[in-house]
Image (cartoon, rainbow, N blue to C red):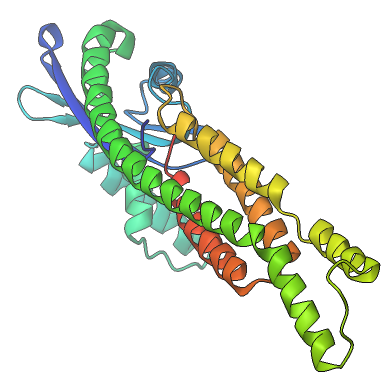
Length: 293
């Protein structure tokens, strides 16, 4: 089981082109797979290729890929620009604004956008020419982030197993109290009748009818059975080699439904307390499941 949150980095060299390639990959939870690639603008089509490479390791999540290229002399491609061209462009923009009676005061955002549009890409080869080196750095970053995601996934798994065991204990408590519900209701009913000087035999047809109606109305055996089945299936998902985050999220909804039904059927304070504690524990499980791939 893997977490959807992680960080990984990798690097390689394209020796022939005298380039150093560095790749950083970060990921956070998301219902679908959304990849965002930051690379030199001149490398059109690389974002689609990176998305293809990601699909071998990611099934869902928001994944950010940052690719940095530097020459062996330390020039960082994609972040350098022609300073003279920037000065000339700013002067032209200022003159144009003044001719229209406008105040031109460029801020940091304008300078960044201008720098991006005037980046110096001289000497930067097409990415397809260095694809082997690119993919080597990319695969190293993938391996790094996979290791982190697997480690965090194991911690999530242990936490979820403990919480599911707690829910199973609460289910067992509910089952025990539910088995005593009819006899307790019978004793309470006879006590009330006795207090009203309406002594009836326990085998009286009216008493038996009342107990039968109560037993049918408060029967939670089906909910108990379904909860037991859900917990068993949840444990199977936790031990699966496949991505089961969505399935576990759906299962949490079904478990919540069974607890709700159990609580609405029962009037016993012990069962009500167990249901409340179960729903609180389930909410913590649902929060953790949001980070599972």
